[in-house]
Image (tube, rainbow, N blue to C red; front, side, top):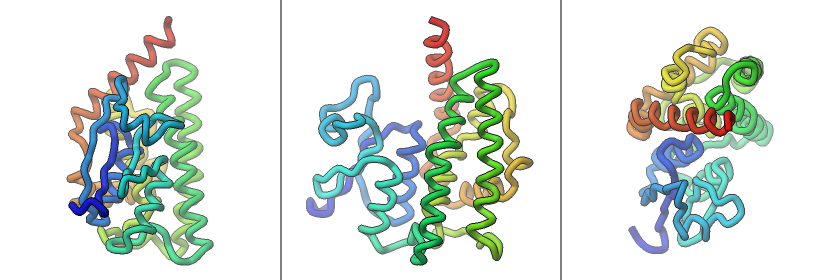
Length: 232
């Protein structure tokens, strides 16, 4: 790869934030080097590239780091015009997509993490929050596509699609870790569920997702760590 076009991604395999950047790069057909980070022993490069948050993902393009997954997705879309366009041309539609992508990123996913990391009343509260947020998201998807949701393929994948599939692709692993289905996506959010199902069948997505058992192992570890910390 020519030095002036060198792209690298610092990540962690179980991070949905990293996964969305990987998917964006793959949908655009951008060659890149992947650097797996040990989050307990972060590399000097990661700390150099992201001194503020010290977190993954970090995309490095021509030696310049870009951080925050949603910012990175827009950078990729603006820098590489090949492949699907992640944001529509229309300013209002673009604003809608940004709003709902941020909604999933900040509100839905954060409460999904709480479901994983808590028990009892706290978990029940998080489940309720996620259910309410999913209902709002379902209505949001309807408002974005008032004439019906178009059939998804690798050439019309958008920013919200990437955020959805990176956030919800591990819902089966979450169900396995918790031993029960706290949220039935198919019943509570049929539009979201059908969109997710179609996205998961795309070859680029199938090839980018880590093995199910590896995700289950990571989620179990996160849950046990959180519960142990809470009991100390």
